[in-house]
Image 1 (cartoon, helix red, strand yellow):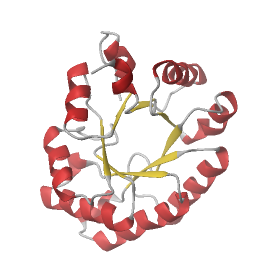
Image 2 (cartoon, one colour):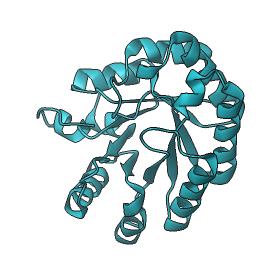
Image 3 (spheres, one colour):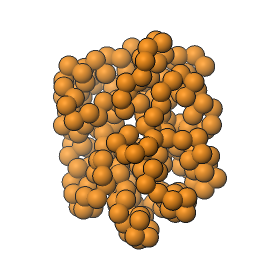
Image 4 (cartoon, one colour):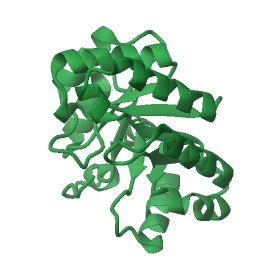
Length: 220
């Protein structure tokens, strides 16, 4: 695959807790240069990026990375992100309630956040490394029923990242309108191409530019 074809599916990501403006600015410059799908950044940088890069597609995270914030808190995060100029939101489900089998609650929370973002994109991180196969299937249904735009494998802060097995499972169980985002553990150009070839529409990684330049992968 050509570099441009790969990068237009990449959410170029910097979510480290010590991310500086210098690092964020480099991320944004690379996203513009290589034509990334978006930059995925901490919420506190949205407005500064919007002011400096008015045409850039900005993604942020909500309830990140643990997911157990109250729904009202997640909605407040969404409201602030929208006010600051965000285009896409990656939310973390309440993993504890998934483990409790409280799938109705999880579905309702996703639906509430999708209603809040409206016509903008909502991606739902289910953190596959903590879930059983049955729980992953239940989350495919929840994401579909709630009307979200994407199901996403991982935060990159858990015990594991995207796997081909999980992508294949998603494909079997999500609704027709739901796309797939793989994130965490993408460590080579071959990984990028393999996940795209398997049907992922987006890949979340901090390493895509380095990998496509033949350099070693960094963190998420």
